[in-house]
Image (cartoon, rainbow, N blue to C red; front, side, top):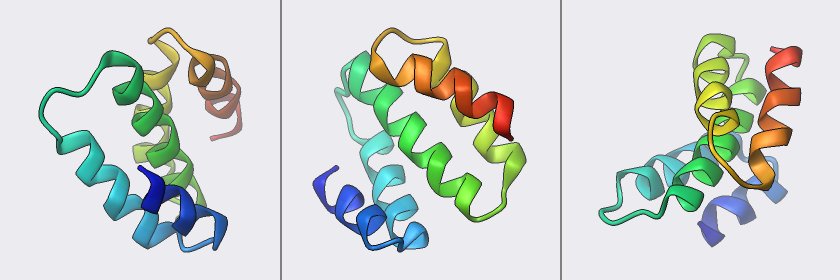
Length: 79
């Protein structure tokens, strides 16, 4: 997750998306980390103008508990 965040800071959303996909594929993810990864992957997809994928990821994150849920709900309005 750290590498993905670094890529996002560098605005390298394609590389960040690959890293977030790896995080999401990890075994034993906690629900909180799964929601967080969905949100940040959604941000990457939105930056790549893939609104459909971003919307699905934001919906997933918004349905969870945690700080990303509110942010995802706001992002849903934007996509």
